[in-house]
Length: 424
Image 1 (cartoon, rainbow, N blue to C red):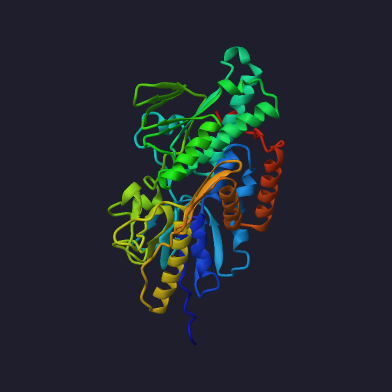
Image 2: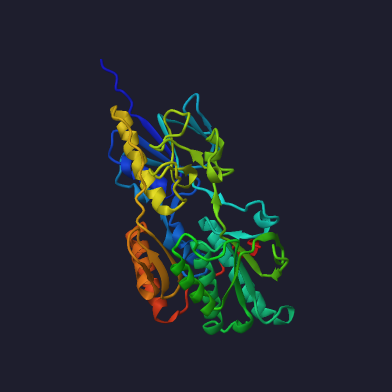
């Protein structure tokens, strides 16, 4: 009697862009895939700032992982948090005590906010990296505005919010916060003086959107300033206080909220614990094929890994396109390994970058070609994000929401959720 040889087991830790792409690439193959994540949904992170500023609902940017793989019989989902990896036994240990054996382990654990050692930043600022972060920030912003309206005698007639970081996330968030202030005053008639209200964007660099060409940065700065976003460039935050921030030039800014969009890091994550010699931002150093240096059967991709671009020793940025492409590549390399074929190095295909500054204003730069800005850039930004958004229903809901808001900014999901009283 012949024994049935068990199929290779692949454990993917993380249900973000990278992890989802690995599991999709292995769907239907002769392997058993288990996706492990502490959340049972995939989050479309590029639109988190719109959830945080009451432009979209949390459900618009989240999609159940089990539903994504409902037609892939060899892919299963495990809700849980990985506590450690027993590399000698090739086993993943969850906080619940459960153990998952693996032949191949993929670390797609993403990253966390990077606070750069700034005093008080981790404790008092509001990061924007997870759906919980976005929900918490939205509650904080709306509660602040409601409190100013209810008790005007306690506060100045205007309100100030500080956004730290002038990259795409910071620029998009600053523009959206200012639009939220505008619609709350104009539509909801909150007793707040818009002329005395401020959104201050702070960055150590000398221009906004530094990864874009200078012409795009200049356009973005003009649009932000025209929309009353105050730019404080060339200075850094040295302390986040309970009532605002202290800057490196000695300036003190009182603020109702400090939103942290200054960067991300893999330090303190599971990927950081595995790395023998962490790379930039605590990321795992990997070989050109995305396998972890010094390990067998362990791979790292996306924000968790220092993925080589394929051009010398340069490392890819922590962006969604890198996560998507490295996830697809990793799946193919696992299949190559299982079939005895040689693995191939990863090569990042830079298709360009884009960022929105607000309604009808965005910049987009293809890898080859001119900068597209204004309404055309904004439409390109909308189209691309709809294409990458997971789930047909989510695409339809977001499209209808954007179209409705484009017309006249009607009442949106400016809701303080039931547990808001525990948010602050």
